[in-house]
Image (cartoon, rainbow, N blue to C red; front, top):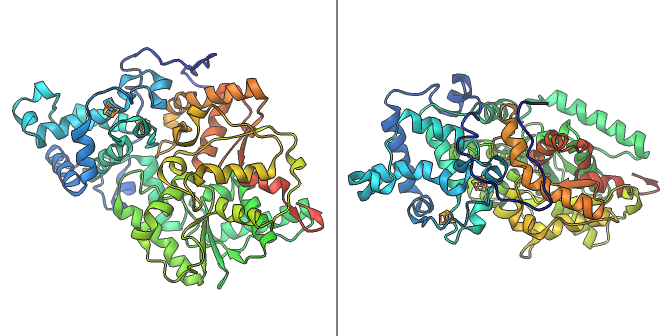
Length: 497
Ligand code: SF4
Ligand code: SF4
């Protein structure tokens, strides 16, 4: 399959011995001018980039007290060193969170601290050089911004924020990453990350209506651009075409159908994902999110519901209000935004949905908590809702459910290995190796409880897992959308759907 070794899964998880430089070669493609300039970045590495990068770092630190505290307060206690899935999977010490932070911290110290200016060697301060920049590019694109390390740091230092700052600096001097920037250009031009134009989207959804009618005998609709619908659903564009994502979309439609609540998608805002977050770019984050506000106003909806996408939910839950709010034009009786799992859960609580769980009796299901949902957002109106609600939805639809080891779920969940702008083929080795800790805990429940399927509510997790589970000798069909399970079990009137 590829010329790297898939990490061995063991009887018990093992912290690897350090192997320096094992991932030095891992480099994602650099963005070209036409991926950079439409986003407001220089087309290529600018003249005098060293000084400009240092100036940008100073600007970011002066604007963000959190970033300054993160850079100033690490005491090198080592608590984070074995918490990153990329270190556990690659053994490369630069993938230890503290070492990753130090790539940026060393430059910050050199230019912005007294000790670093006058005694650089004593405090590990470094000049901004081409070697340093290349190291930043490689290793800040080996961080999925999952925030697992921050859970274990006694000071709460968030490496994801440092990684976002480093990427923001690199973009500002013309060294962007192709995968992320190209997608941002696409969403701005066409409305979604896939570059699927409106007519093709409508075609796809009409085809889906026919498929669901054939399978269930029920006229479930997948409406687009319906003026005055109650709900605008924004979902990751992967839901429109790939498995298991599309099973989730089929499930959302069935839930809306069963609820009797009118809904629509938008051909203008046909993307919930927002890669602006991955590159720390407030301007791009705002531009992508604004499409959703505009669509909600144009369509005159009362509520906005977000489909299964981890980072999209973080952006919606944590940033929308200040980024594209206020939402005073929406119905105040409902949360803004609302997650599709909250929407389905509320209906389940009210007894408004009926399930035949035996439709999923060929499966023993476990659930993978997605990083951005677990550690950067919430759901429902009670603490821990982001863990309880998706599980409650799964359990409403299946009879056989098992959790993975407690130290690998909830807020301690392991990243899938493909988040944060790393879901690109040239990083496949990193992705396969970074998935090792999650594959280890999956192996344990397969062996101990006969688990056959793993469900999740993140488009990136689904795309990453379907790609990498074959490296660990599993069938890609084991990965499920939560609403795909709902779709199998929900009863739609007289005919089972
Ligand atoms: S944020 Fe996640 S990927 Fe990045 S260093 Fe921390 S644990 Fe690793
Ligand atoms: S756990 Fe926090 S303080 Fe300790 S080494 Fe890691 S980042 Fe530094």
